View 1 (cartoon, helix red, strand yellow):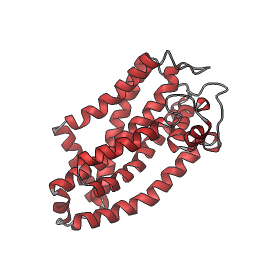
View 2: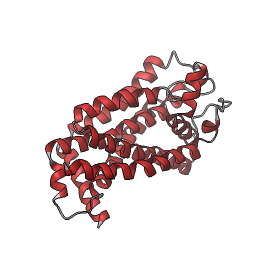
View 3: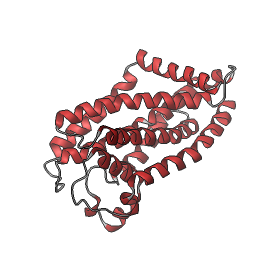
View 4: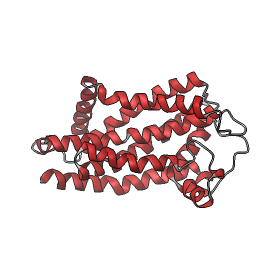
Length: 261
């Protein structure tokens, strides 16, 4: 019942993007702009010993983009709340959790499209995968799993904030610094001590480090950093599990409360 209802909701969201492609244009263009901007404008000023900066950069862009891509979940739910569509869903004989499961699942598909675009752009500017197909697949799966977990945080915020405009402003001022105060675009060893500690324990840093390891883009002799960076894959998986355990029930509870008003 839940899977069938969720698949219907997911299909509805995908069809919506197909009919209104503007919803996806910004999400697809932003990573291309970031890759080109950092690779050719700032790349000459940021030196990473032992590796071409483009190879160091692209996994960071991957992480930042899929996290921002997860915000589509919240903005979509806020839009549905504003238009009263959530109340219509509640009147149908369907599982209560189907709306959120279908919404988050469809946004994973969106992020897959974004990753394909980023991979293509990365290959054009000189990024390469230096490991096996299986290792690279693990890297992409980690990126998508982390984005899926974040989408449940975004679902909760979208149901609380309600208007897409307020949601977009809130997520921008929170996600933007989180993705920059991390091992995303530059090595953290040059950060001030306090900021370096925050960055090394930031799950975005471990996600980026895990992706670099799986793609073979980590420079030889690159500083190991603190425990999260030394165990990037398990630390990232731990965060994914914690986020899902906490925010899936919270978002589902908020959905029932918010839609009942």
